[in-house]
Length: 184
Image 1 (cartoon, rainbow, N blue to C red):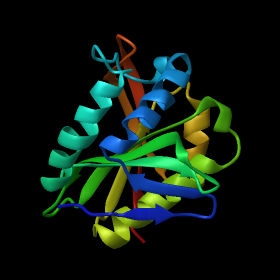
Image 2: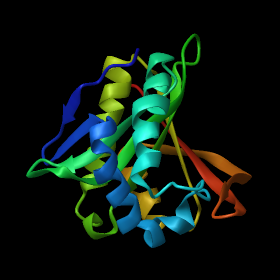
Image 3: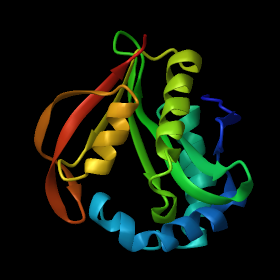
């Protein structure tokens, strides 16, 4: 099972959520629904409810960690450890000769522009390389998402290509820029 406990950076606490975080995570997605909509897939019914997140955090996420396929971190400011301000997840974790995963992330619209996501990605990559022993972390963004492009570049991700109609985002197939960071 993937274990992380609590990760810390200069200003953030990154921890694996459980059912007790369902209300805070639900609040995060409700607060940011309009802001995140253009960058995320269409959400299933009930996505913005506490019941959905209780199930997701206590069953789905646990199963994914037990099977060593994914791990989701909830982001909190160190000075406010009860309010979720973002998420960062490692998914599609592959062992064997690949030793890689995908990185996904989001940050509260009111926390943008302060370097918090850069800080979170740096810490999650360190966990992926040092604790999980992975060699490659891949992250993708839509070409018009300049903010995400800048964050990934600051974090040492290099562009490896462009995938046409890569993911269905907000109901439409969108191209994505493919990037990766390799363990040093």
